[in-house]
Image (cartoon, rainbow over all chains, first blue to last red; front, top):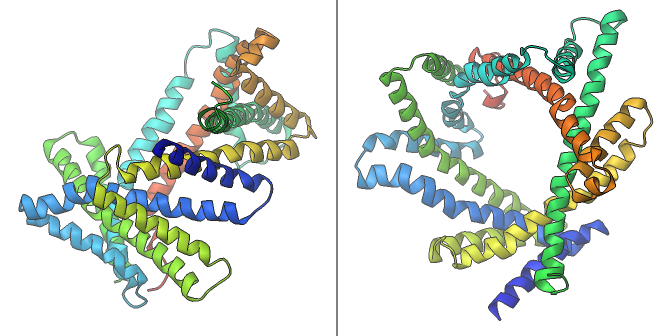
Length: 199
Length: 207
């Protein structure tokens, strides 16, 4: 009985969201509003259990690491975001957390630039490695905006555009297939789990 | 001073983190651990800010009885009920909190993403009506990659999965690699702009 009620609730909410395919309607709006509330409500106990208790409550009240009172006060400065006169105090927790961007400089240079360049500088031992090299160089040339894309240079950048089109097509295909697999999952739930029409 | 002190903090911490990346010393590692513990201690308050903001936005809609204010009641009721369920009965499997996740939150969020399958197909039809040779190439690559992921592709022709694999491993790799290098350079430039105080939009408006 309980399982049936659970399935009815899930099926009703699934169909309510799908009803948007027809047009915006009260069922969709109801489900959308509920999704926002439930998602936020779901996060609160998780943050309390996994972050607040081990990193704020336990160190201060059980382990007596009173130094943690400082970040707790720093965090509570977020609440001044709602104040017109003292809103500037909310900048302190923001900038403290953003200090990590310092690590972004060497990390992004290493992982996104140097590692990729190292992978691109392999011996050209076949048609595929040659195509990868040509594609990478011509796309990089395309994104170099300090020179007008004209003449021979323009022809090179045009080759880069063709490579990008194939890359975007592949990404699009992957994205569609991911969404379709979710759609198949929901249809399997409605037709299989709820109605028993497919096994 | 309301802007200068935060800028000094971010510059000091930022350059300390740049140094941390190049100094594998215990003091450097301890500094990173200390920072992580403090940031984790700060983060629950950011979530509180989000919850209070949601209450304020929806509370205002309800009190002013703006059109469709009833949906704000549903949002807040869903939030309060789910949060209370987690606090009262716990977050383990088999609790009302997990029931809400499995039968309310998860089906709706999965359906929301599944809905995009229809809209992405509709957008593709509008965008890909093969108006140029480049759009045709994009469309062909997408179709071959899609067919290559499902058994239907292999049933049509054995070269479809192979071509799909080639597209992903050769031209797609070249495109992704070049874009990744561009993104990396962009991230580095943005990080440096923040560290040097050139980019300040995160400080918000006002004094």
